[in-house]
Image (cartoon, rainbow, N blue to C red; front, side):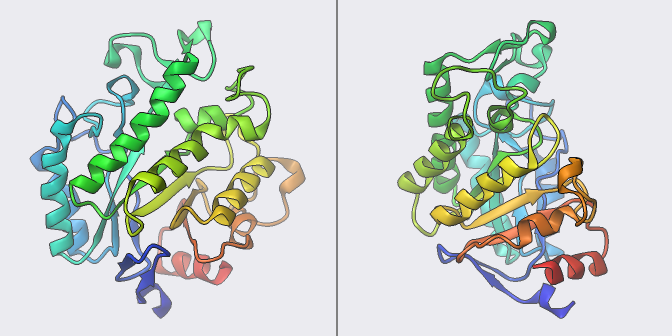
Length: 298
């Protein structure tokens, strides 16, 4: 278990004091306009003081129309930079790294919250969801990248691209939710295009030592484990990211798909070749013994 307290270096050069990361937890405490509130600081800074080597903010939406819940932090405007700058300084003073999680709820944005119809990869009249046009998908890509540039300008150590939990990038990855016939739909390569364009854009336009993480989940929302392993393999092989953060709901449960059962979910990812990219997992890691068991699994 002592390995959990050893420093960990990332490919770009950033280093965390230990292997503990504060997950991007939804808290609904930010201001109505997405700027950070005093409560944000009262939640996050003590987590850094308490010893987490890396702190991740709650999901911060990259477009106003991509808000997923009330009290969500935003990063879609330059007005959000000042608060993030103060947070970055406070967290780093406590010896932790700070990542901003970049998020867009897509089809899961509540209509009453965004004052309009939510938009995702495909139309869903039953749920009042409209399909994003091609130009809108391209703008979404740009807005993820611009949001990362804002986080860098604020002095944050990096960003995590939220590609998990059925939000917009996950919706594009899902063959159940993505029924497009253009270059963003159909094959896995097309459905993954949004994610890989965002990653490539951030890496091209941010510093080489700016920590870039991606969070994925392998199940639910129509996702297929075999496909998500291929996405993970490509993310690891291309070497553009520093950290692959796999949210498994429960790291030790077996997959939902019958054909993949027989070993816990964590083992489906821990065995992947990853070069220098670091692998993190989340999902019911409730004790030091659980964390040590994850380390032992690789």
